Length: 386
Figure 1 (cartoon, rainbow, N blue to C red):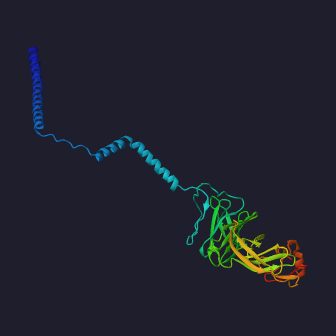
Figure 2 (cartoon, rainbow, N blue to C red):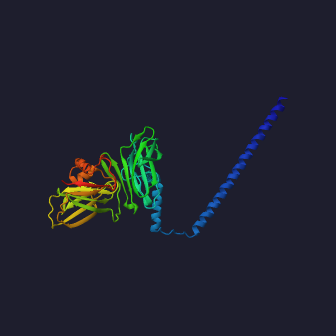
């Protein structure tokens, strides 16, 4: 029984060893054939390379060497180049595309349409649209056909009424910066514009004076009138005949010469005799002016040159009227006469004719005027000289 088991186990062991030996022999044979095939392939390849002519590469040209060099630079420095390009794009966007908040400006051409005031750069970026306790004007531009663009500011998100000749014509709402813009069309004439803060009934200290010319919008005027004086916001670029006229020259027995006429409203006129400056006066809102000065005795028969000049806000002369005359013999009439024009008052008339505005009571008494504050256009006044 035991012998049979031993023989069976021994027979099984010899059979397993044979299987392992056969597998190893097959693997060795496969590897030998593979090595033989590889040797034959390499031998044939070497024979072909030895017999085939070797093709020589042409030398690279200068342009090819340059391109290769550029490729090498790009391969080595592509990241710094990319960063520099991104920085350049960001700089261009900040300088030219990014909106900023500088001085407010309205640029108007002949055919321009009024638009809300944009924040545009004029070299220095700063924000001027600070809210104020009192409504104020910033700009006023006059376009063709009398179209006017006005901009101002007050407290943010508040209502501002615009008054033209003391009548409310519109109510505007300020934005978050306290700014507002109003455009309207005016007929030729004179207008005084003021502002009123609706919520607190706050009136503006400054007023806007507009003169819309019937000839050309470029002949119109806008002025900002403040307690400290007036400032021209829109100065005429074109003058027409009649913008400076002298209607009357009076030489009085008291040695004064008085010149009356018409000119652009709110501009200044100056008077000189034989190139000697005598004084200046402001033209009224209704285009009239009167200017008197002491000249002493003018001798009959002598020739004199009287010059009236119109000046803009900068003091430049924009129009001139020259009047040459020969002094006539005195008529013996002690009094002269003056026709009241719109915008006149007795104080100004007395200043021009009598040399002192406080002497208006003399004119009022001679003309039986009970209320010196009440005179009328075209009213003829007698001016006593003695």
